Image 1: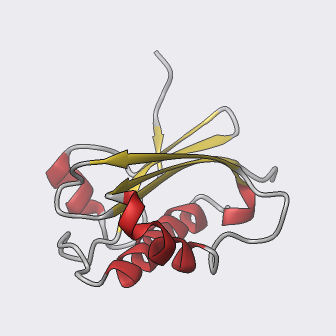
Image 2: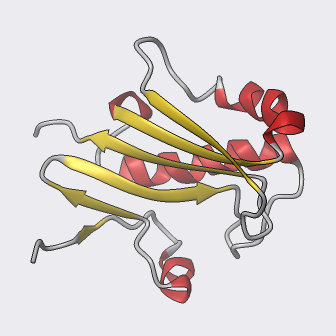
Length: 131
């Protein structure tokens, strides 16, 4: 069995332990990040949609930084949105501030009906920089 090298962002271990999953796993030079949402420190959703998307990226960036990476190292992105037809433009306004420059990572966008009280979630795979 492959050893799971877990990456925890600072100050959020209790949230992940409570929900019994790892925020990210480092394996064979890649970082596999669990879906990140716009949750506050206590795990509750940020109510404002654009602020929620920004907070999801802040939470994602905290994990990437803990692993020694940035969004520029991301090669694959999957985003989930509740009711994307009415929310996509507002969410994507926030996303563009974090996306970086071309060439951009691959993206899969999925419309869903439920995200545990959230409206947006992002999961990524990053190629870790060589030491």
